[in-house]
Amino acid sequence: MTTETKELRAEDLTLSIEQEIFVNAAPEATFAALLEELGPAFTDMEEKPLHAKIEPWPGGRWYRDLGDNNGHFWAHVQAIKRPSLLEFHGPLMMSFATVSNVQYRLSEQRGGTLIRFHHYAIGAIPEERRRSMEGGWKLIHERAKRRAEQGRR
Image (cartoon, rainbow, N blue to C red; front, side, top):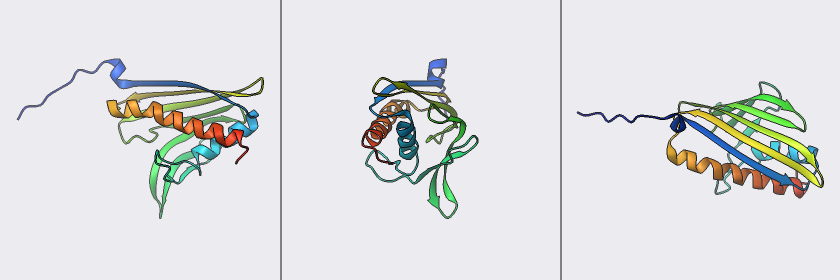
């Protein structure tokens, strides 16, 4: 039996995704829409509900509730300062040896709100998951933007 080993570089063990999203809505409405989109309105790529829950306070959990005490832990709320900061840390949607830090920084801009998003991760993240993460975040942000701009909560 032979075992193949692969030499890993630092780039293989880290992930950094940055996005900026301009929303034509006030920071308060944008923050509320973001919490809604990451929580009860969260769906997969095919828009199937994921039953996500956010406890929006320091130390609160972000998780997928499958009922009957089953589910997936994604992160803890590391920091929250309405309506300008939301930060998580944890494995997120990855069942790998990894940890992430996700930051949402919202600032009022002329005519709306600018969201600065950064997802940092370190660990054993397969390449295909790396590629899909950026598109997944982009979809979540597009939905939150639409929700805020339409005034839905």
